[in-house]
Amino acid sequence: MALFAAIVSASAANLLSQSSYMIAHNHDNLIRLHVLANSDLPHDQELKLLVRDSLLPLLHTILEEQPEQHPDAVMAAVAGRQTSLVQKAAETIKAAGRDYPVRVELGYEEYPGERKSSFLLPAGRYRTVKVIIGEGKGKNWWCILFPPLCLVEQA
Image (tube, rainbow, N blue to C red):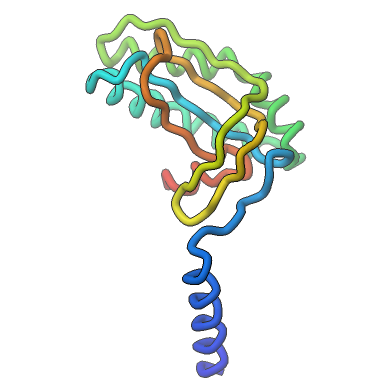
């Protein structure tokens, strides 16, 4: 049995080394989460991460409470808690001593193909939950909200 497991592991490793990135789902069944900083200044980039960290637990709860694990149902659940997301982000921004407005936009966005961790996300139009801090002109942090890959990364 141990020999079988070793062979399977070696085969899997060989496949992954030949193509170091695997395609993860597609634009029809993913929801992307983006948190856009006010600017690229260091304090705005740090704030972006604080906002991200404050929202991920709430988003995790929203996903856990959603009985139907389908992108449309998840987007509807997020839309139903959009005000809570804005309030949580605003509290985090205020606690950090900043006075930026924040908004959460839900919709579709076009994205180029991207590599993240060990998967390739093809270019396309994706459902998106976008958190925009202030002018939203800084670098963004992103992950796959559904299926909940970014929530796993944060655990």
